[in-house]
Length: 178
Image (cartoon, rainbow, N blue to C red; front, top):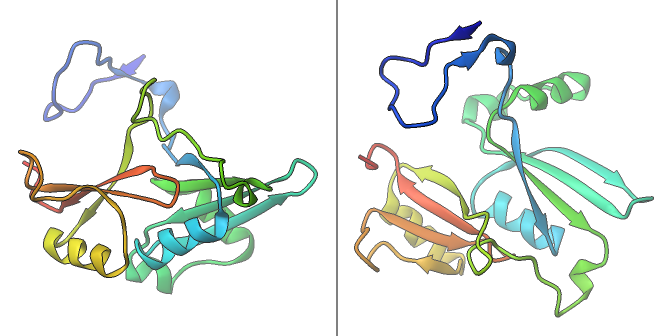
């Protein structure tokens, strides 16, 4: 048994109806490996304004996990705690999980593949912002590295910045991506 895709959804070869067995599934998070957890947390919280929702340490396996989300003011003001926070995290969409393997921050030659050089794979994550020009000014003020500024190339309505590990982050303006 399946559920029809919404009538207003785009049509493309390969798109299937929705299996009823998948009802209730939530695309919860994407994981990125990071070299230096402190630098990454500073960037994602202090520049992009994300909130740390969960931190798990696995010292026997020598890694930590950090789960961050971009919350609204209302969500920040009403953020639950304890077991309720754990349940809240599992119900969210668009969480970013940062995985830090101990010791990588101390190796000057260590780096992760960002997926945008050969062999290509993972490409980027994306943030939509209310004002692209204001966001670019904020990134400049904070010394954020750009892969592509809005004035570069033919696509003037997007930017790409890099996080401390060189992962690309697309920046688009809300309601301007038509």
